[in-house]
Length: 536
Image 1 (cartoon, helix red, strand yellow):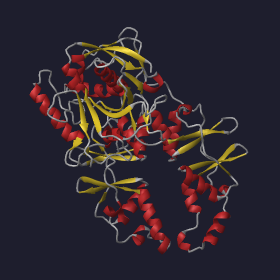
Image 2: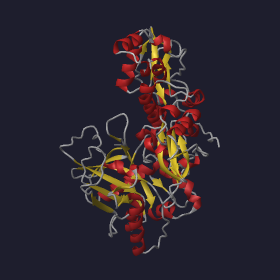
Image 3: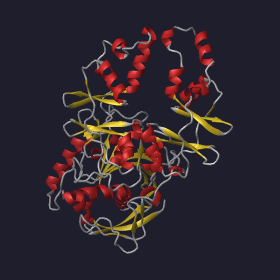
Image 4: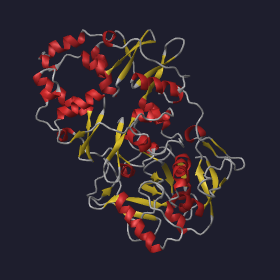
């Protein structure tokens, strides 16, 4: 792939990333958000090319091939028949959990710190698994880049960390860690070992003051920077953006973006005169929650899964299969759809469309031709997140800076009906479950709804709802384990990635002791995109 060469001051880079200088903290987040992954790839190639000159970055797009699911950061070829599917974490000494490192730190102290960080943050020795889902995902089988066949290349996982980490008592920068046979791995993971590369340890092992690195070139639309100068003069923590360097231009914020930059151009539709059963089948088979309703090629309304569910006969009515089918077969989409539909156009500023979705509390907008109302595609909240995931946002900082505080919670031993009521009244999708100050689980609205559906099929509808139908259940009976959470200090970009991978619209944020600090919701993310503060 296209690349550019940069010269980096090795010692200044180490100082900038690991010094503990508070003035460098926000700049550290900014730099890693802007060129962190390309910089890491450049250092990996610098290491591999000492063994083989043909080492190269093949692609910066690493997915499972599915629309949803985990994604990594780079495909790297070692020049000798091996492809590394690479996960990069630029956690520095200035990040939460990082350790400040002085340039004169002894080798013994470095070894001690490396082992401690490995066991505290990366590897769970007791359960023989990685600590964090963000790290564990490197073991998921990824789709090979175009033009590469699995039979011709040996694919192995590579975890690249800025931190000083050592899985054992060695002090090498590159370590291969065998995975125990009983180690819990992602589904269909084919790997028996993982490679771990510490960028801090590698830079400390070198002697040259200036390194000439080959960085993958990402266009300004996807990464927000244009590399036209061969130098990166990191001279001190206050000068990390070489905007003054000859010939270099940086665009910390991208040009104003339009709906057409984020929308997807294929939309599943339904006709106004089609039956309710057709909407059920389309939503179930294709996994969508809303269908634009078209008539004579024009968008005349929209139907969501909520309207469909409310129009279906209740199971508690005791209808026979014949009677149920008869009732459903008499309902047309035109009878239940919302009209007129909220729409947007390809040329509408993306920020304006986000504002409409926030204000009207809708999850998607049909994109239409302005003069004809012809459907061109859809813009959903997920489309917005995916479009913004790799955009540089120097002012974003960490997720906890934008999270919702004063969060509504529920106790693990509270009646499930209490949790259901709080979800309903506050119009929430998820509810943190607490045991004292500690997060012990998450209660999802979809799980409560499913439990109510099952109970309602026997008892029928009731005004008291969950209180009548679920009297014996506690919140802990239905909560999910707290695997979907973020630690304090997690960059906002990583929060975006986690939401996309888990397909959720909210994640709790905890501190190092496991205490709940708040929740980062999709609304918080959208307000951040708009440059607005989160309401207290």
